[in-house]
Image 1 (cartoon, rainbow, N blue to C red):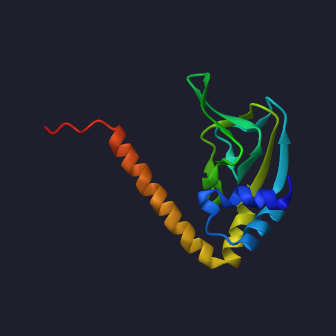
Image 2 (image 1 turned 180 degrees about the horizontal axis):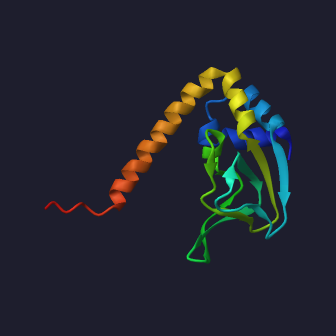
Length: 152
């Protein structure tokens, strides 16, 4: 896959849509390409997250260990971003990620992403709006899923 193909994949991800082609190329050239064999771990639940990953090809199972049992909570494939919050702040992995097939990924490290934000501060303003909208959507979804409070 060429660097331009990787830029095209990043351009489709909401978090990167505010970036110009040049900025996306900088992100791609600063990223590491990883190849995982089927069954290989990308990361483990509760690890400190220092980067996000874009699936270029293949499939990753996101697995949460609950009461000692591994539960696949989601499977993601080409064009998906895993761990976007790690680009913004230090956090822990909520799940483990295991390659369900041979998988190729771009690893975008927080330090490199934050350098891009420092060099192009206008991206940070757009990112603030993106995160605010996601938080509102999350809260609204949560309200719809929770039972109403009993008034006593």
